[in-house]
Image (cartoon, rainbow, N blue to C red; front, side, top):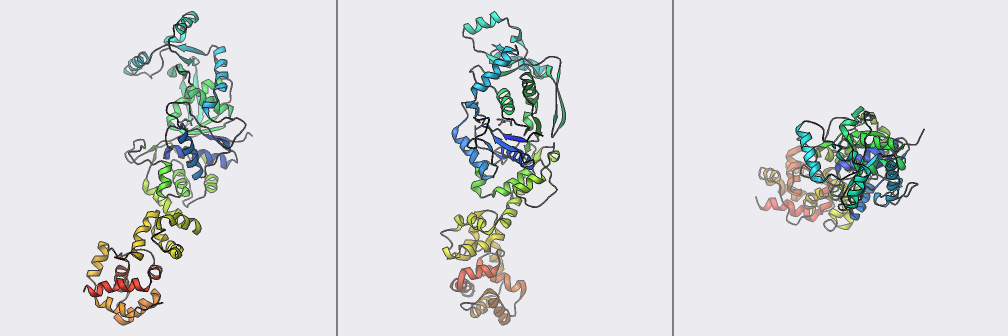
Length: 468
Ligand code: GLU
């Protein structure tokens, strides 16, 4: 059996977003599951919009998510180079082959002409395919036009009277009558190669066996299969995964909350949280727990890829983030939160503080409120804390101040207050928490109490004695 080889083939015209990276993830999961290979190919044929910085950024994003590739940029491989801009000789070769077979012809139709023809067809309710106007130009006529300097594209002659069929991993049997497709451009008038052609040729030359990609490419596939068959190149197995939509069902866009991987990283998401969320967006897992990439790949099953659009839900993403925050190793957690608290928390208390707030943070900046709750000189009070404090008899705080002494832990302290005041349960703990931290909820009090120290605790309790 041939080794499974999947790929991610981004066009570096912007930062990668949710949708793109989910495609990469599914391909990684599929290759890992079958101990195959995953390759990264840079589809930079759009010279105007492709940028080196995006090539670098997308690699950084993939590495951050641990979606490592075994062939491609920086990894090498037998089919190098892996940037389409460096592969022109290969494309020329296969183009010549098609030309020699008479399967390509020059098209001199202008953009305006094509647009008019498209509109005419659309108004007649027909698929917008090329009319075939230049398909039968005589060789001399075409040569004359070229000699006159007329710009032209090269079109692939779709085979006639046939139906292109393939078994889509996600969508099952697909059938496209060649007639509905029409002859399509494989080289533009500026000499650059079109997506259909280079993408298909590269998959074949790079030995890609499985292509999981967005549903938006579904109608490209019959064209690509026709090309590969004409070139007698191997055709990969295709699977078109459902698109990600927003709450209104519209394709996820920047406006409806799609975030770039870079933004996710900067916000403090853990890669494992992003992977667990994305893996479940359009793929059903029986497992409901946070899984490593290896576990995800073991549980991945291409027959569990859904056809229905996958709805993006930030709440779900944050759920996986909270799972990750609770489950990553302590060292990783401290390294993650430390930059947000350094400078505000004494160096020697960083670890203890981090441990204390762990159940109460989802993002590093969530620690800020607890930094204040422990260390603020003038303690801010939440509205709830104020309400609790206003409803509490200030005798309790007088008692608490008297009960407090240095080197006392929270348990000993509260026991003394309880004995001396008769208060207990919520009536004891809530006012103390409110007075000591300015909040009515939060991390375990013993930890916060020991971090804030005797002086601060005393000062905070005193506020409520004096003001009563
Ligand atoms: N460069 C194409 C894209 O980013 C690749 C499509 C494919 O995966 O075949 O949409």
